[in-house]
Image 1 (cartoon, one colour):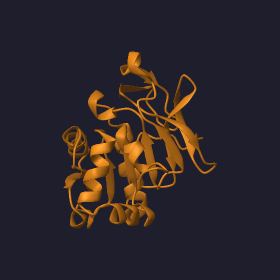
Image 2 (tube, one colour; image 1 turned 180 degrees about the vertical axis):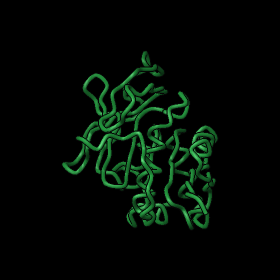
Image 3 (cartoon, one colour; image 1 turned 120 degrees about the horizontal axis):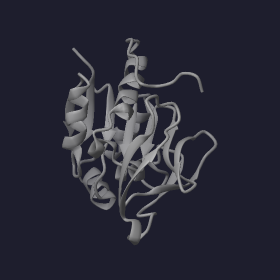
Length: 198
């Protein structure tokens, strides 16, 4: 059986993530209840509305199972609201505080080409929609990209989070990195578009 990537499907743009996951040759599995977390090699927490997602996680009893999955070492990738859900004030997995709608009303939605540390192939085309940024982070958090000095992509061990929507730009390299993290954990060989010389 191939790599199985779960995508939290309570709300938000999970289908666009599923399309990229399938294009990379992995299986996309929608996650709505705790039983859906069984057998996953990695998990994506997509964008959406963080308040609605918080209510959905509480309603379905997903909080503790999500924490256990991440703490077991399973790679987790959060985008936009997914970054917020992973932070100190929500699931408490990523040692960051994400500020909602951080870019302000006038820049609620914009696109930018940004360099992401460790990714080969040039800048990432990032779509920001009412995006957060990281307002503070612990020493164990690696900042991979910034916009106007504010961290918008971070990694902490098996957790990867970005403030933008790579899936809306058809940008697959961060999903490739997630697959590589999953393959590394299972001992399979998978070479992503990631530079090892950092």
